[in-house]
Length: 116
Image (cartoon, rainbow, N blue to C red; front, side, top):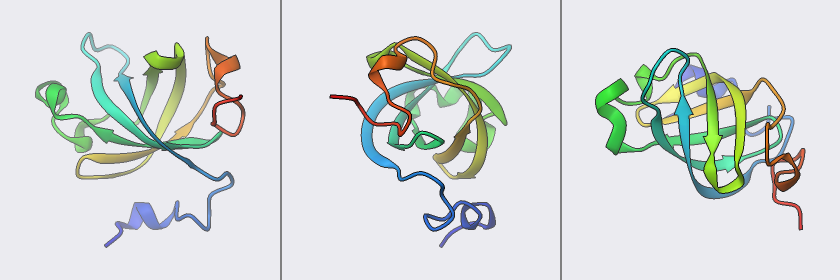
């Protein structure tokens, strides 16, 4: 069952198609020393679906404690992007990108997929 906030970003309402991924990343909340480990489940040029990993939940608890805005770091691609929380559900969140990809931008295209 979808929450009210998930209905607002249903696949029909998305502007960009999301590409399935399974990439380790880190949520970097402003003003906090410790990041939150996560897994990028899917991504597009406008947003992503993230699963919060259990290892760092001590700092924030599950997705309910993820701040409204943060930076997302994807070490595999040396990429960082500013995000705004779109929806949350248990250990999964949806985010909207609020900036362009920083560093490693040549590795991820506008549509969020790898160029090749």
